Image 1: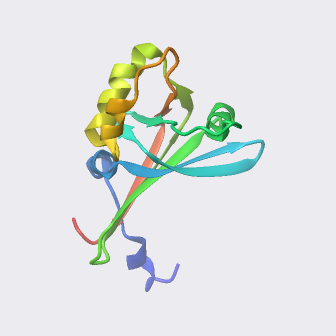
Image 2 (image 1 turned 45 degrees about the vertical axis):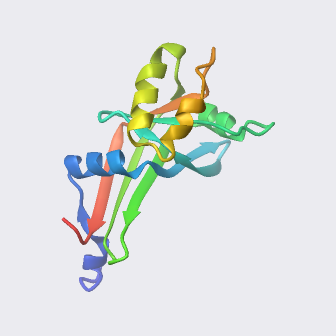
Length: 150
């Protein structure tokens, strides 16, 4: 690659930089695939500070598109970013399997979402159901890049 463009690629984020963005961001895009057809959906998320992201699938359609893709995706990826008006930015991509949580996992998921999900006050209105529509992405791969602020 031409060295004139190398500064545009930014620098790699270390583990603490990745954790920091996952803790601060609260919203991103979950990308899944079913039968070879990709589907990306913007979602609020919670991060447990370790290896799990949590998502509440609200506002389901009659065809249950998010659920169908989540069930059929062997691996999903999630991207979040932070872009400043001064031109600096950070982005993180994580990947791993998606699983629907059990009611016994609700407290951990809810705590993670209340800590950093966008509009987490909505969770106060979300009652634990017999089978909550909450999903976890078990992070197996993570990477991040940034330009600007250090």
